[in-house]
Length: 247
Image (tube, rainbow, N blue to C red; front, side, top):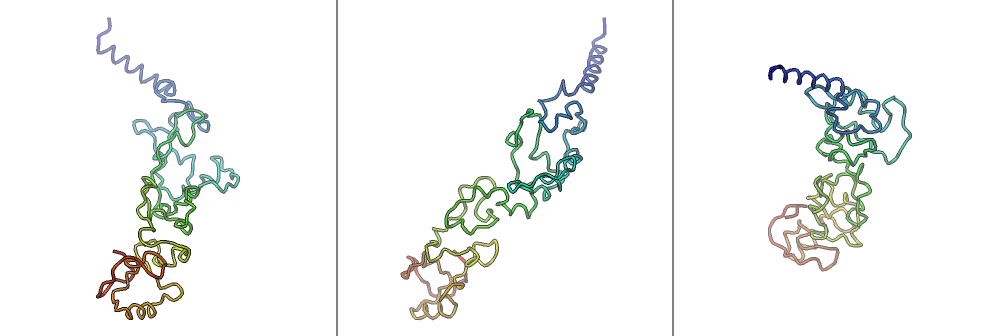
């Protein structure tokens, strides 16, 4: 009769041997995707013993600079205007943050991990329209919006947005202009100017307001919430003001 210690040692050695010889049968969490079927019996192609899956294993076959441009054989892929080519701006160690496997032969992108915007490089994080062009609203506020959605939105959810233009100044028919017309500092929508259109020049605005005894007139939207001649419901204050800044 085998001693308990010898029995467990033998069983452990047998289990290790079986796992080493047939890992795809004993510890695989599921079938590989169609593109990885040739690796079904070669777990070490993607996995490093006791270290899990490493991105370094991925880029042995999938060069980031070629993703979307060439296949793993180096053959040039057909041009596709809808293909998003942002992998070049990613960290070399970020593959497994979005991608996984063992989800079945017919697995899709939706079966992978949740995408983390933090994996993108600083410049790519501002190019939101690369991936979200179809989600851009077709209203007057977004008509002139370019790439950087982060000016008003977060990466957690589109809503609630952090800014509603109607609450500050209504973009009516006379003010349906490009954002850059009023917001002259790229990416900083907290600052604005009204001096880039028709009679709105520093000298003319100063003269019109001083005739009314108004000295604090630099914060236009305090009193003017739309393009009407009557202005808004704000109250002009005497004293200095900070040009172009909204309280």
